[in-house]
Image 1 (tube, rainbow, N blue to C red):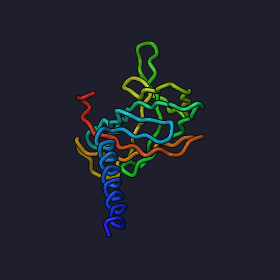
Image 2 (cartoon, rainbow, N blue to C red):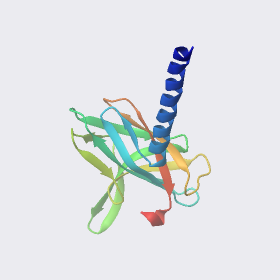
Image 3 (cartoon, rainbow, N blue to C red):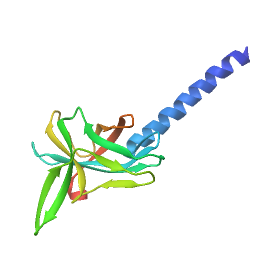
Length: 155
């Protein structure tokens, strides 16, 4: 009788461990799928309808270059890849259609560089919330990432 219950108990323990690991990953603004690892994912929330910016680190631990082609989130009507460029003392933002990440490299999305531009918020958000964002790739499966919503003063 004990032998028939033992696998069920192990299965429950395994599920609890898996959910615990997932909760830990979500709580720290990180995600991993295959050879791709995202860490330090945060969304800089601006007041009102002002666009928000997303920052994170994307590491390619694989043997092949991967191409990031975009992002999507139900919390915003539009999410775009952007890059800040400074020329002659003036800064401007430009949309980027894709970014290649070579094997072993990490691409940092940070202020004054590459970032996600979140436009047309579709739901109320506050500092401390979590926002689900899906990164899309030309040559790899989509990667869901949980971003921590932070104040612009913390970056």
